[in-house]
Image (cartoon, rainbow, N blue to C red; front, side, top):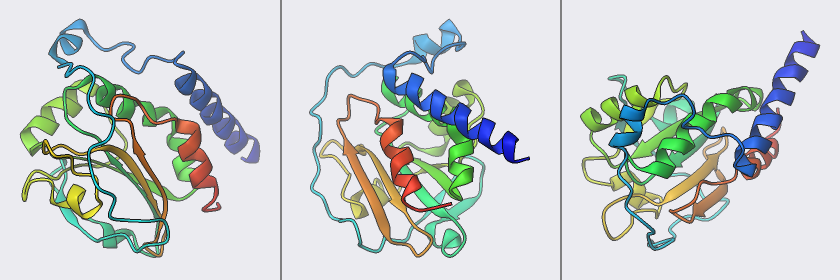
Length: 204
């Protein structure tokens, strides 16, 4: 059993390397029809928001609808799991469509550190339903911050002036404390190694 766990972890680390090096293309195997639906907004201003949280702050609670039909609240994970919030700007855009499927191949690392990932965008549920179905199965809940528009992104200080969220990651421990923040260049995918290192700090 121990060897099996080590093998899973080793695979996850290998996957992180390939993803960060740009060797693994998360769009591999996606149909040309899907690729044709992707909207490329071009190069955007890297960041366009004012920070509201710092490491050590208590993470603001929220409740959002998920594509699955349930309501998901941050407080439900208190005392049970660490949480990674992955805000992405918009459905049907290139970097976002690569970033989330990439987390599928490192699910074992999240499990090892007792962590749930919550994906959040300001898109409405029908849009997210269509987009995630075309991406394939994602192991984590995808939540809509559509209405009140961008309210959760605003609480976390990552709502841009054009109404979309920054590409950002927040690691929150089981006590509800923010332990890691990465408000990333919106044009680029965050490095998985950095997130893995942040998860390691939480222990196993």
